[in-house]
Structures are given as C-alpha cells and as structure tokens.
Length: 238
Image (cartoon, rainbow, N blue to C red):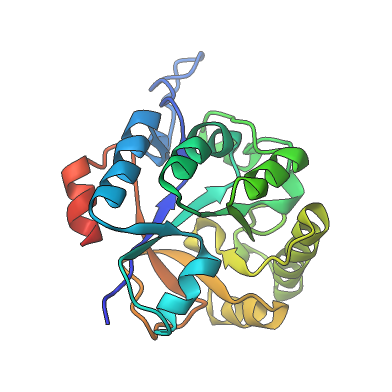
C-alpha cells in the first residue's frame, strides 16, 4: 500500500521581517508559509487528484481500511492566521485538516518562542477555535503550554498530555483524538502517556511519509516551509 504524506504547517501568513526593531535577527521565519504559496499548494493537491484530510479522516487509510489518493494536513500551535488565511483555501477545495492547539494558550500568543527571538503572533481564541471546527476542520492537542516533554518529569508530562485533551474537549464539545509532540521532542515513555490518555494518533517532526501499518503514535510528517518550491512540494507528495 502507498505511503501517505502528512503535511506539517505552522503559520500561513506574510513572512515577518528578517530583523526586529532592535536590529536582532528574527528566527524560524521559515515556518511561515506565504498565503499565496499555501493556496498554490492546495490547488496542486486538488489538480493531482488528492484529497486533503484531517487526522480523523486519514486514520482509516493509515490502518489500511481504505485506499485512495489522500494527504493529511496538519497545523501546529493554533495560530489565528490558520483561521483567517488557511481556512478559506481549505474550504474552497473541500479539504479538512487538523490544527494542534496549545490548550492553555488559547486566546494568547506564541510566547514560548520569545526566548528564541521569534515574532509574537496571536493564537485562536475559544470562539475562533469553534469557528475553525464549524468550518469543517479538526482540533488536536499540542499540550497545555507547548512543553518540551523531555525537559519535564513524567508526572508533569502526563498533566500536559491528559489535561490538554480535557481542556480542548471542554472548549469545543468535541472529543480530542489526536496529539502532536511539541518540538518533536519525546521518548518511549511519552508515547505510553499519549496512549494512556486515549489519543488515537500522534504526529512527530520526523521527516517522511506515514506508511500504513506504522505505529499510530509516532507518525512522520513532511514539513512545508517558506522556501518550499511548488515543484518540490508536488514531487514529495507523489
């Protein structure tokens, strides 16, 4: 059976300037995909006969229960620009996706990035998360605080994994079935915590396609970056 690409996005927005007001160099600008690039990528998927799917809709394909030309679409962190810039494009093509939300940061900003000199951007509010779901999309967990699970003890990691699920379910009224490891940082014990918390899948930052039969709690993805050219994007999908 065909390996399945799961795309990893962060922001879909205008790319921030290279330097901040204080002259310091901004980091991780590559994680912002311009709106026009995202629109062309989604158009290309449709033109090649692929369907973009959320993790819940993708799972039967990953389990080998269904076959077809499908691609998973995921967004990390829960930025407001996913709602304002990505959602209209997804809806235009009839695609669904999963946005991994940091449950304790809803309505705030990506403040966990400030120490890395990353431009601060707003995250979706509770009402905007509901709007995202009403637009045919899905929400998954990215922990409570965007914690690096390897840097905290197992009890704290369990709270980040378990309580974020409960918080998102309270906000949305929908069962939260999918998880994403912040920074792609995790160990075998964290896979066990994710399983114990009741998630059906978990995605990583390991680059590659997800083969049917792969462990559902350690799924590889293909990062899409500012620099990802359309031809390369298409070649990686097929």
